[in-house]
Amino acid sequence: MKIHEIKVHQEFDAPVEQVWEAFNDHVTFGKIMGQKVQRIVDSAEPGNVNGAGSVRSMRLPTGPFEETIIKSEKPALIEYKITKGTPLHYHYGTIQFTGLPDARSAVNYRAWLQVSAHRPDRGKGPGKRNRRWTRKLCQTAEKIEKSRAIFKQFI
Image 1 (cartoon, rainbow, N blue to C red):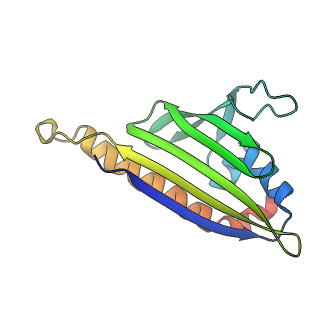
Image 2 (cartoon, rainbow, N blue to C red):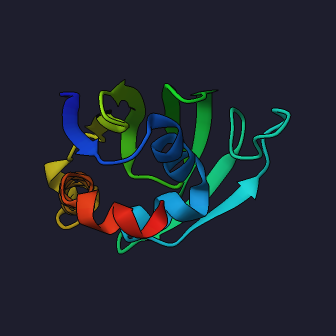
Image 3 (cartoon, rainbow, N blue to C red):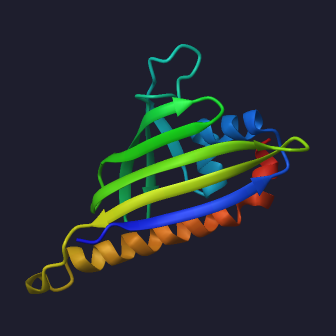
């Protein structure tokens, strides 16, 4: 099964710390992505309930799923993986933050995903659902690309 990669680069007219905070907060991240996101497990990191070990829940038209934050390094990096409720065989993502001159910042989002194998003998089953899920993930990546204007509401 092929692993697909999504890459998005976006620059913002805000300091890197401010951008990192917006992406780090699960509820704000959901607003940026146009999804309802809820933190269901707090991180044990002092001062960052959305840090490593925290779990956020969201729902797409294909169904609910949970993402677990693997690494949270302020203000440089957030790593996560989907840990429950997905038709994907594999999904891992990184969001890297870089400070730029003039109090600007850049976000580099990368996600790797692999859908479960389609079995032709199953008709409309998992193959159709997985194609729909992959399409929705690509649409989410497009939202990140277009989020510059939306993002200004949250900083």
